[in-house]
Length: 377
Figure 1: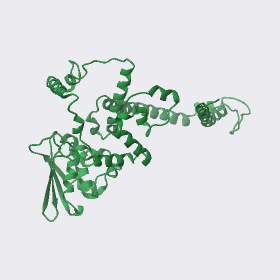
Figure 2: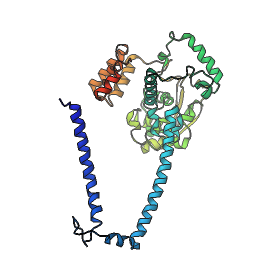
Figure 3: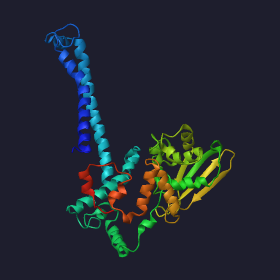
């Protein structure tokens, strides 16, 4: 009996073939007609000849635009290749190390970092499972991660060795910080600080000054002119003046804040935001923020956050984390799929990876699904 999968493959290939024929047929007709001996367009041609090619190659009116088109095409190819190569190098850099160089032009490759890290981890596990070997001292070895990339490789190795003493006893995942805003984590305490102001009319604000930890400044403050005028909403996710202005103008920071380039009112207020170094900063152990809002009538309000909400010193509750998950899941899953995924995550130790992926997976051909069966979560 012919399987539905086979019928589907045959039907899809037939549809693709018909589409290609539909696209190619006019080109074939033009090529055939170009060899016609007729004075007017007729198909099929009454006879074949080269009169049209002779007219084309003997006419300067045709050859001049042809050469111009070829020069333009060549220039476009070279320019596109150079730009494409530069973009590819930037993406490859993020794939290799997840660096912050994306900030130089606000490129969207940052969004790929978490997913690519997960992809790399899963792929490494599968390759190890089928026998691919790797160095056993990838972190602490003489040419390992710490020696190559840490500022003080030997110190990092010693610190890593000391941390192994509590392996299996102290679970650091409980110290992980949860982000509750869709922008750079360094910006979150500034939004919290502004929340302390209560209801404020943006029209009454004359200027805003922010004190920033020196370690965070290169990410959210530099270069300042570009931070005040990002090219896209995505780039604004790492902009202190835009996030501060958006919070004061719109009253909140959410997905809509970065769905489009900042509005003119937000840009206008961002131009009145300034910053300076935060004295005695505890960064990166704590994400602090201090903000002073000056009003047109001369009075000012100063607000401070000692550490961001969601971190080790101000942990979020399970209910708050679940609410964040549900809000994010609703962006791409229906309610049933989101609830199913939430249930699977809460009982992770009871699930095989194939069952965990079920709420998100696209149905795959039977042989591929069988190859993944039995994998442990």
